[in-house]
Image (tube, rainbow, N blue to C red; front, side, top):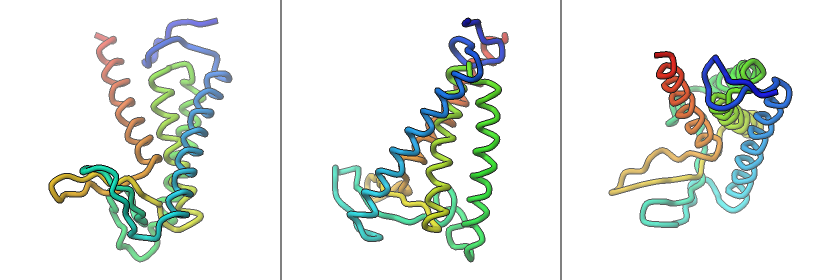
Length: 173
């Protein structure tokens, strides 16, 4: 039966099993969308190729051996396994947290997004040694670092975690 959540998150509290499967299903859909788009980019583009879409957006094939915004991309190669290991640890922690808080809708949604994105990027690091990025937004000659569906999901999840915490603190007053 449904009951109100006392630990934060919006919505109804559900039994751990069914809620966990819902969030794992969302994470799986994110992984599928991420990997499908990357397969398309790798199949149709060579490294560095770009297609004009609008005056502020291109599709480009880029390889990121580092972390967000190519942090540590110029390191000697150790970062591949470091970020892979970090991703695996993050996946384990997120699954544990989802199991513990599966009924908290906003929190669960946020964690599922981060989980799907982390798995998508870990798959790239294991298969290729780098993450395939392809979304290139730009304005007035400035290009935001290229990113992918997994990165978008992680960013959305992080924003929702911040919102969930803000709402939890606000309710506590």
